[in-house]
Length: 353
Image: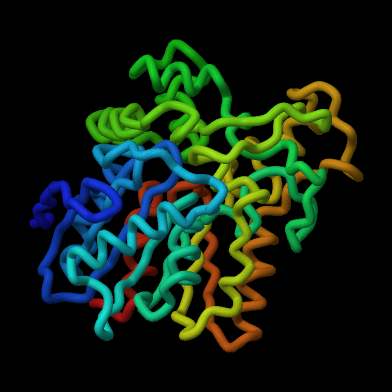
C-alpha cells in the first residue's frame, strides 16, 4: 500500500512553510527540494515509494506552492532558500546535535541543497542531485570555470523568463492553446516527449506551477537593461536572479567538510540543464531565435553539465566522493519519467532496502 502523505504548514522565524511528509519519523530522513516553476506536488509519487524505507519530507520553497511568498533577496544567491530550509529542519528537530538528513534536490533544488551543504555540512548525510543547475548559475557564462561573457552578466537573471509564460501563470492558464502555456512548456521540456503523466497527475502538476508567486520579488524577479546582447542583465530580487552567475557561485562546494557522498542523476535528453540548453541565450542566439547574437567567441552555449562535473571533480580531488548516473531516453525529471530506475538508484545509494 502507498504511504499516506500528510500536508501541513510549519511556522519558523523566517517563513510559514508548507510541507508534505510521509513515512515513519523513526527512520532516516530524506528531504526533497523541488525545482523552479514547480512545487512539492511533483514529489508525491516519489514520496509514497520512498516512505516504505524512510521518513520523507518535501517542503515548498518560499513563493512556491502553498508556502509564504516573502520576497527573495537574490544578492544573497540561493541563501534565502538555504536559510529557510535550515530554519524548517531545525524547527522539526531533524538536524543539529549530531542529526543529519539525506538531501535530494531537483533542478534549482539541486543548487539549493548544494548551497545548504556549503552552509551546514554537518547537517548533511548525503546529497542526490537530479539535473541540478550549474554551480555557476544559469546563463551568461562561457567555460567550465564559469567565466562571464560580459562584466554585467548580461543574458542571465529575471529578464530571461519568457514574458508570455509568466503572464499565463499569473492568469491561471490550465489549457494548451498557447505554445508557452504552463502545461505545454511542462510537457515539452520538463519531460522528454512523448512522455505524459497520467491526466490527474498532469493536472496536479499544472496546479503546482500556477501557485507560483509572480512579481519582481519572487518569480521571475527584476531585471536591468544592458548595452550588451541580449539587452538584459540581472537585478537583485526574485528567483531567477538567485541563479544568475552575478549572485550564484557554488564552487565552494568542493571545499566543504565533512564531505557527504553525492549521487548525480541526470537525463540524457534534458533540454533545460545541459551543455546545449534550449533556455540558454547562447543556444537561442546561435539558432536565430534571438536576433543580434555576437557569436560563439563572445557568447557561446553555457556548458552547464560540464560546469557541474568540473566542481564535482574538484570535490572528489579534495577527498569527497560522487557518482554520476545518466538515464537514457529521459528529460529533466528522472524521478517522474523513470520512477523505478530512480528509486532503485536512490535506495542503493542510501543503503536502504
